[in-house]
Image (cartoon, rainbow, N blue to C red; front, side, top):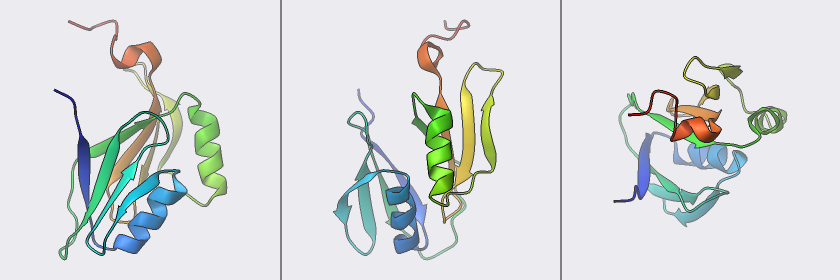
Length: 122
């Protein structure tokens, strides 16, 4: 089985689309109520679905970058605000945290070999 995509709820489609384009994603579907993006590397996609009520999503979307610190610096120059700058985490990943305009939590991270093969892997 392969994960096809994740769909995030948003209340302002244009603000969300603009945000993910600023992150460097490529938009591949554009409708008033649904947008889909491909990531700059690999073949992963994710989508946005417009909803009328406020978003209360507790999920976290992760985007990996081999050059996390420079990626974050580039995004900050573009005006993207981060809640947490890149930090080394106890689980051996380096992470930065931000939120999209709908409040969806995003972690930009670098884990290298530890993503699939941490020392505690079963």
